[in-house]
Length: 263
Ligand code: ADP
Image (cartoon, rainbow, N blue to C red; front, top):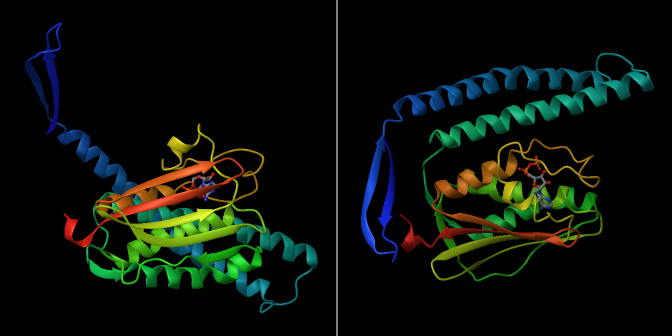
């Protein structure tokens, strides 16, 4: 049941009462579930064949099925790139529908955030070096922890670092660190990259939203990464916030409830 409440006020803004509307949204919910089931079924069905096509293409590209001309190699590489993007889309759609239907792994554990950041920074080291980006873990308080699902929060940090690498031109800087505020433990990912305009900022967490301009034209993506990040953070009763200026960089902050505040 959906409930909406409208207050009644007189001219002096004094409360006179309220009207409450109870709305049966069973059909809406059922349709939403059907849509979600359909998306995840399609994504699941196309993900495996795409991955197997990619493996077979790799065999050909590695020369294990005979020699290729330069032209054939080039065409095959371009096709493999497109299939990689499609497989990525299927996988992200699947992730999103799992999270939104509450089917994500609910197992929680106490996770040392400094260690989590250390592992992720190490994982992305080669990718950052390959683009001459200085990826650093800034020091934070020792032993800062949160009660989270490890796989999900790893995915959150990994998506944010991967975005920072993709949207920061060579020779830029990416810092990742954790700290705490009143009732939150925070994870920060800050870059000196392209930044995000005021107009785009409210939309970047929407599904399929991609910033379209000259600078982002050749950067591949699905527009689902930040939607996944937001859904995961919210499923942990947390919030995500971004500060950004075009051509100055972006600073994403994730706030997770301190263990004693977790609901
Ligand atoms: P994708 O990167 O696949 O397009 P995301 O949902 O991860 O999708 O991001 C949505 C949009 O937000 C991106 O298209 C990009 O324009 C912008 N964005 C995300 N992270 C950054 C960042 N660190 N710096 C600049 N722009 C970013």
